Image (cartoon, rainbow, N blue to C red):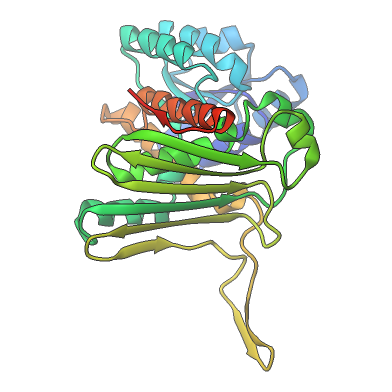
Length: 329
């Protein structure tokens, strides 16, 4: 039985606890949170023991840790968990600083512990199917990737101020997806952005509407658009065009019923929030982590993937600020 300690019992910690509860051969053995009430509630649901963070990391009753705490705590927790010999599952971003991610990678490598960066969208059944069919050569060499990602509404302005900006907070998922689908590293990033949804976001120094173009060394192109507003639900679509054809993954709707009458054809809105849209992805990514730790297999995405996505997000932010394309080493 693989025993997992949950660091962070908020929304994402609860998501991971539900996923773990649906996987055989694994259990939540301990939980820790800065808020005692959240920790006690999750412990009651999982049968776990409530511990302090330090005690959980040091516990012999914990084989692996899931880090679902605020981003600014990840650095210290990764260092402590790695030195304690624990396998690590860490929510994105690993850190807001690429140099600090490199420092985390160094301690993880020195400790020789498994590490997974939680880019859950790679495990969405539809997106994973697209990637598998690209790898199988179904559409030939990839030429253009198009990713559309729009939230139903903007987050609170307090969150925006501490988020690191749209490119690092929201688009980082899409930047990782671009790498996942292009199968070639981008070498150029060009970004534009505006505050069209909420003026307060612009006043906070961020954007709520953005587009990025990534280019690889061979000339492959990825176009990403983000918006903090979509009146029709949580908009998550990808399209990959290749030499022999095109693969597309559409939105997940609230239901599949379509009404046809004199007014035309009408379908249900897209699912409204990321929790329901990516429920299967969260479960699959945790199953992948558990299988890798238990069986010693490769665990991807790893900490290097977290670093590369952060570098792309940094480059996109710089490009938007400076109004020019940024070349990547």
